[in-house]
Image (tube, rainbow, N blue to C red; front, side, top):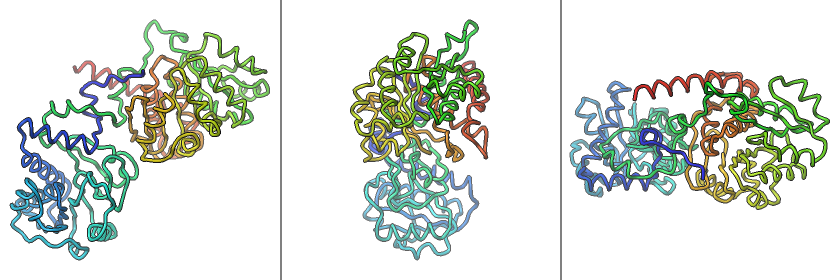
Length: 503
């Protein structure tokens, strides 16, 4: 099984906790001697601090809900009023309906509590959304929906506590939520802070320490993480003094015809990711096209399916990629099965995924070694169940086919068969260009060829892909991506060395 050995530091930096896990952390914190009243007070104080850091005093409206999120809001209102801010509070329901510590904190508010409605927005220059937070499991309705909708249309900045009300903490789904400029959450991020559309609605996300003991947080095992080099940098391969081109692995890309550009870009991605040798296997008829446009990438022609089979059965190649430009036909179907039958690490992308749309189980049966599938949503829907949120879908797909699934998008999810998942957040919008996915497949291939495990290769490949796009900036073409990788890798290695020496 592919493993990522996340240290405690990596976990604390990148772990994502579900709503239930965060509630359990609070429960265990109370059992460890930290009162709920203190946790709530710290939460509200953190929100007040972030507001004072960014804005000067101005008419502030705090919208409080009937639960703990509302209690956080009352703390925020009380502290900012004490600091001289002109603060008003409007509430859904009555403060006397609040329970336990939320009610205690609400009682410290000496000002008026107005009834929630769009009318309370008048004259507000900053709004705090303390209505529901991440635990809401139903669409907004009534005065909460109407008031937030009016706030969203009014253009006044909104600060959300935990998540914007209406954003589901575990999925990022938005059920009536409006965009915040700042979201203050506590102890750990949740998946909804990273998954779309929640990520866009949260604005800037600040994770505040509210006093949950480290021992408590460490006792809760996260199964999802935000993609970051802290997770995999130690496993990223580096050339050693005694390295040679063979020790760095030999990557093989299946080259299609008449579409040839996709495989060529993928091959360059593999080479730039560090593969010591990279070869494209092409139909004999395509040899002149490939040979005339490639220098350091080798081209291996084949004439018959038997020729291709002999190529795969040799010992010279470390990992394969098939899909970019391969064509949706029975030949591609057979080539995928032949690659998977070797048990060597394989990346399956694009046409090589779609070709199984009439028989998805044939793909499941064929996977017997390390394998990474890299579908976009359209390709995913052709061979997997498309129901549920993105994390759920990617995890279910990975479990079904016993492969790592990279469900691509602005919020790419990398899922392993054992349920671990990573959400990527560094993909700039410039990656929405033809061929960028082909390069991603090549980067993952290059890492697999060097002996990196499938889950690690997929996570690192996705992050490197986004960082390369950011390195280039506007005007990006997919063919630009491979040449950006050396600078990205150089900085990563430098940071890794500096961190190692600091310890």
